[in-house]
Length: 72
Length: 140
Image (cartoon, each protein chain N blue to C red):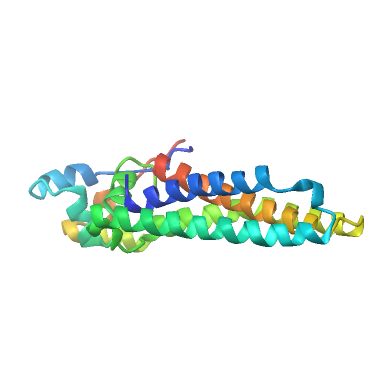
């Protein structure tokens, strides 16, 4: 499986938000715990809507949650 | 393992066992006769009833064990996994239908055609369910 060209800080942000679980975040965003795990591990590229919802849960702009990793 | 993934596994095994039984026990010596059509109908009925019973019991069992998961709504990743599985299943389905069309022109019997179509649908379903399980296991 090809690695996604972007990274994320969801795990750190969850920890900083009172050790929020993947399940809690999934519930707030409207996806399953498995989907949050797949996003965190860089296996699944979320839709723009879910990406914004995740950022809104942490009260951060999108760029603070997801960062583009330029391969060049 | 999620409720949805467990149901996929049960469906996969049920289909392999049910249609394995069907194709192994089908009286192939009468496939070119009218009796072959009746045999297909009767055996297909038994197979379908068996699948419905197993799936109903398995779904109820897993839903009782994890009611929260059973009521979980499908999210975008589930939908993507489902559409990718369906997309992959499209290829064996189309190939099977074309093979069947060709076989019909060459005079394959009615029961032969039904069985060929049935095998096509089963193969496509196995590809669909198998690929969805693979994607669930992999994460996406």
